[in-house]
Amino acid sequence: MSSSARPPLHTQPHRPYLQEALALAREAQQAGSSPVGAVLVDASGTVIFRGRNRVGEPQSAEHVGDASVSHAEMDVFFQAGKLKDPQSLTLYTSLEPCLMCGGASALLEVGRLVWATDDAWGGAGRLIAWADHPAMQDTEVLPCPEADLEHEGAVLFAPEAKRAFPDEGWALWRRRYPQETADVE
Ligand SMILES: [Zn+2]
Image (cartoon, protein in one colour):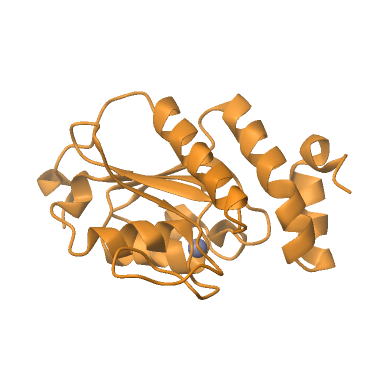
């Protein structure tokens, strides 16, 4: 799609949506899953779908589950089904999307991706430059627009990064977020 034909994205502040994604990340953590949350927002600024990581939970008709690919973004996309005017939508996540979820966002032509906190190991940005990727040219990418929420997201995910990632991955996290990872046991 050419940029001139692009439908408008919402113009509301990003902060409340990132806060909601972080709240869903905490909900995932309380459910015993990985602390990541996501919300999909339409052109008027309305949250139309909410998702969270559901690894280890059963799959249902309403949400993806029971597999290590049951990421928060995929939970949103499973609920949403066929997207109407995907280029007018903004996907907010508590943590930088992985290659699968970033790739799905590009395939679905989601207009904008915003995340609270970088993922130095699992995030797609470790492997590709978001802005240079040919499939991402119709998706605006906005990493970490709110410094305090970036901090909050890093503190929330750091224990999971240490538990789930190999030593190399944890080392990348410690380098990216030295303050937030300092006290993780
Ligand atoms: Zn993912």
